Image 1 (cartoon, rainbow, N blue to C red):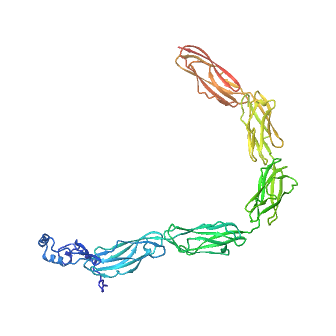
Image 2: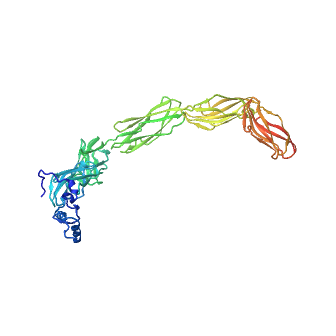
Image 3: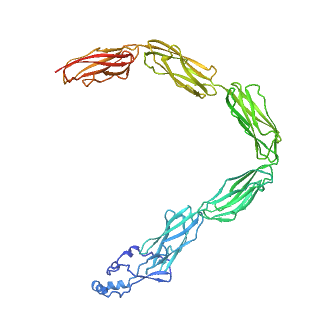
Length: 616
């Protein structure tokens, strides 16, 4: 039997680790000996090996140790050995906030000496979610082959796997023991869709289509669904057609459906609430039910109640717009008259077509009235479309609005001046901007150059173009004088604004561009055959306008003459500026050569004579 200690301290633990020789001078032998396990009752027990086994071993021991040590060995007892009934307690799945079934761990003494149990404690990341519900071991002395029990419970605070350890301290030879504790926290999760059931319009006393309320368990534990009840002032207007959810368990991932229909008992908006009780929520889940009760009389509805035609070009017809006359009631609707209010100014609205007058419009059906607008000027125009019917409101009106627009143009600048440009040189472009400032697009037609010097000017861009309101297009105008002196012309732009065309004056001055050469003649005298000689020629723009140097070339054939360091070709020299080129003579035999350096430029073509003689 397990006994409480009677004011006796537990045997010192360090004594258990000492060899026999330290307990009275006997020979040093290990305390623990291998043995067989056998079952005594419900406990496993370590059996002492037979003392007579291995006679040859005893003979050696008798010769090696004193007889007193051997006697102490045979009379010594096994130290306490703590054996736990399980190394792991698995509590399984337990609902959050609830406690699962208790689990028991048994601690047995498989030694021969008394086992003293100091304490049992919980540790680990989820130790607070496990509890020792009863401890029949702490502070007890456990005799050989006896056992005690510790009872534990699991109450998860979080979902998912939870783990901890039970630690057992004692004087056992095998030291501190522990048991792994595990469990899984699970919980149900109630989901209801949709959040509102809208049954729309229904005639009083008549049922419409049904609608489903879907209830799901998205949690990890079974969900219990309690009462499902209808509350609210119009609860009697909503009927439960079927219900497979009330008072039942719903497994994780499970779904059930409650079906409702709407049969209004009165006119106007009708509301109720579905309350769903479950063990997943402290408060019931509520879903709104809404519907509209309709009387049997016709109800006229205009779609839209206002037509806005916006800006329309003067004297042009707008695109047609449609007004729908819908019957949202339950009785037939008859349109007696459709009439337009006369306009005192601003334009004309006209009914293009209609299929409403004197024709019954059944419930949930509609008829159409098509209207268009033709403005007379650039002012706004307001009018009304009046509709008389058998509906309760008798007469209704549709507001009509629109305004006339016209294209307008702004030209910037009103004239273009190019200044001095070298004869036969194309100037940089001058830009004419045409802005559309009216309410509709500006149509730009032909762009034409006229006047005495029209051929000296050129224009591109904007021709046959539609310019949206607020936008612009650009005309590029160029000047290439054919002679020296002033040039004049006009650019005529035709468009669809009020004045129909715009004249832009053009002027420029043709300036002569002259070329000066230094030197005017290149002389290579007495150049030894097989060597080379270089002469630099400088070109200067000496006129009033820039000079365009297009190309330089030598009239000589063969490889005795060449141009190097050409800084002039394909460049324009402003007045007074220079450039240069190097002529190289490399004779291969003696004799006299006469060649020319030709320079093509905007002022024409200039030649420089080159005389060269070679000696041996």
